[in-house]
Image 1 (cartoon, rainbow, N blue to C red):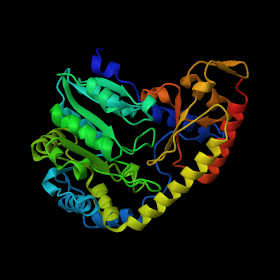
Image 2 (spheres, rainbow, N blue to C red):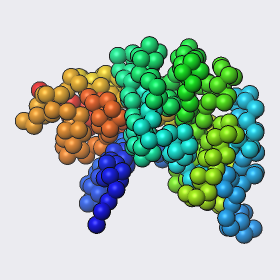
Image 3 (tube, one colour):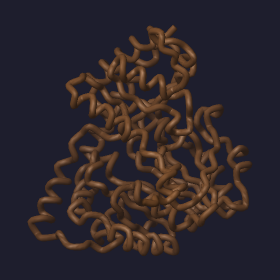
Image 4 (cartoon, rainbow, N blue to C red):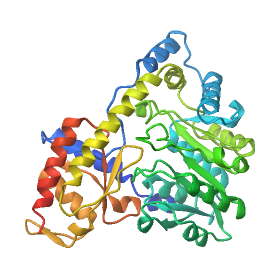
Amino acid sequence: MKLSQRIMAIKPSATLAVDAKAGELKAQGKDVISFGAGEPDFISPEAAFAYARRAMDEGRTHYPPTPGIPELRREISDYYKRRFGLPVEPAQIVVGCGAKPMIYEALAAIVDAGDEVILLAPTWVSYIEQIRLVDGKVVVVDTEKTNFVPDLQMTEQAITPRTTAILLNSPSNPTGIMYGEDILRGLGALAVKHDLWLIWDEIYEQLVYGENRHFHPLQLMPELAERIITINGVSKTYAMTGWRIGYAWGPRKVMDKINAFQSHLTSGATSIAQWAALGVMRESEADMRKMRDAFQARRSLICGLLAVMPLISFPEPQGAFYVFINIKNCLNKSYKGQLLQDDIEFCAALLEAELVAVVPGSAFFAPGYLRVSYATGEDAIREGMSRLRRFLEEIK
């Protein structure tokens, strides 16, 4: 039977594939340590369960309004006014089944077949596939030589008459790097000059460490208000990945279309999960801060352990919960007689020899790197890094 060219071209998520492989080995009784999936290991805050139970007890199990329950949209509106001083109105907000579907819906609303979307590599794997799913063209601007911060001249050179949008993620998955004021102003100026959309994915915006500060582009350039679509959610901040609640907001002209698209796609997000999200946004700031403090401690631990290892280097992550490790000095060398030609072979050998699962940088358009998630306990970090160091010390 025929399958579409669109579906035949799609590649599965490399991060979920790594986690699935680690799960298979664990099921075989092997002591695997996985640094693959970007998922907090904490339990969702109690407010999520309390609000969900109350919603079920009150029978709130029918179709919710497509753009989200009014209470949650008002809470998101209040959050952006409180945190960023931005006048986001509930009518500008659409709640969906996670941030990932909201990115897809945003792309579907602004990209026609053949339109180009600029990504700044290293870039999250699903951006690439989602652009292709709406028949858009991925245009990659590499940031490796500029410390994973975009070069504005290179970015502008990538813009053509078919460019529709620039998709941005800060703090970044996979690097943990953040975009400062000057970069955001520069990218915003390019969007205005070339009449482009900005899709601004800030799903990790609360997970920022040390003296680093997260800015929303509209704080710096209010003139972007009619050309920016913001993506956020509760998954990372509140350890609620399985509840599947994300949201997008932007100018009414595009959000009304995204809402209409969602009405035919999912009919909206699960009602009970929306009430759970409302609960954590209202009552779980202390829980969020406790989790963020734990991530910061883990960041210090893992960076300290990595810093003394041979052959590798990495930028200290400023946000999110990933370390992006340069392993180019390990490639085309031998591990116990096995030639490590690229990052994919490195990851396979590491998993086989030391039962440590990490994601190859090739999945993020960054060959020669590894992404290591520290969204796991400190004991697992210590043991996993000990195994990685042992592996590195055997490379000749």
